[in-house]
Length: 526
Image (cartoon, rainbow, N blue to C red; front, side, top):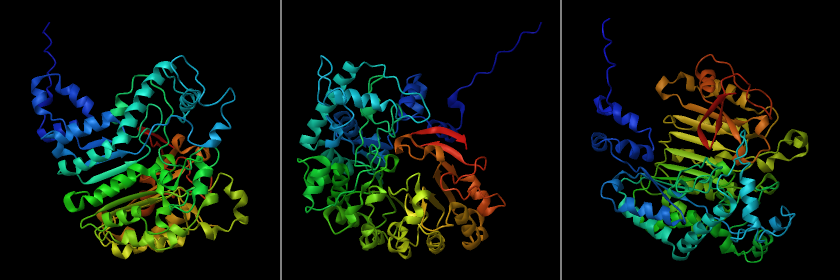
């Protein structure tokens, strides 16, 4: 019998350089390190890259950040700094947490021989149930071992906060990263158990099976059964801070809950034109928060720093997640007084703007809609967005606000011809008959985007919450994205993927895809 010829071998290095680099771009640095270790040829062919570096009040994050900043090759590849604005807690943050949730004792009670508190034990247990649609997480590292490791994290955090080492190394990075263009500030880094929003060096170094209370970062509407109120941003409401956080909380203590945001914007301004940052992303929507929108009540240091940054020549992107408290405490003054409008108008070269708030009607909204004066919740779009100041705008995003349908369509119609993408997510409607379904009809019939050349038509993404996810905490939610279905309706002859149902606006089987904000790999047809 004729001998079978051997299977032809394959070598990654035989691929064209462009194709090989494109494949490697999908790998994380940890995987690239393993691949480089397989042979000397791959080590020479594949370069480690650090396009993104992380900072927080954690010694390991600072150590890695400084190492990249001091590396003559790696520092040139850094284009983004992500500031993890989260600090680990030692005890309940709010006095009312002490009055419930601990039926067997006090939160500071010691429950192990190693000194673990009842608060840590409970917070670790509660975190097991953050994973929507999945079984609770089983922490394989024991309680005592987890507490011992958590204590080392707290000690390191204390050292950083006492010395402001994170702020100083951030300033150093501004000098050392010549390709830096974006700074992201977020309190949502820790995400949910085993699914962080970012895998920082600190999080990567966690022991396997380590369980701990997931930190909230900034104040959030995603707190227990009652959303937190956004407190005033001045020195005249000491009673409000003490009432919510206890007698030790002053106005400055409250403002410093956004320590990273304040430090980053101040450092960027003080650096003047010595940095190259043209994109600022202020996150938090993933966990129902953002920067306190009372910053826009009046001129303050934080407002002035933001305005200074946006007026820099070439500043091109701002993502602004705002913490506005819950529906009962919602106040439109920060939107109506003109300061937010003036701030955004500074960015004459803006190409990307996205504003997200935390306003959201409750699941039983339809039951009390007739008794509610909706005028107090309608976001006045043209008093916020200075669209005439943005002749080069390419992306417009709006999320978790209450709008009038015709006002939104009029705003979209006035956006410049340079517009290439629109994101509308989790909107609430101010009038009977307003809906995503009718919005798409008006966008198709009024905006005339369909008549544009195919490459110039704005891509539209609409994201909603399904009936099953309403009422869940922000961390647990999954949303439904409609991209292709919206495109088919607006520009082709597709069916409208939405219906007149406040609780379930997306029609099942019409092209929606269910997504998980902490698991990019998750996606299933709705």
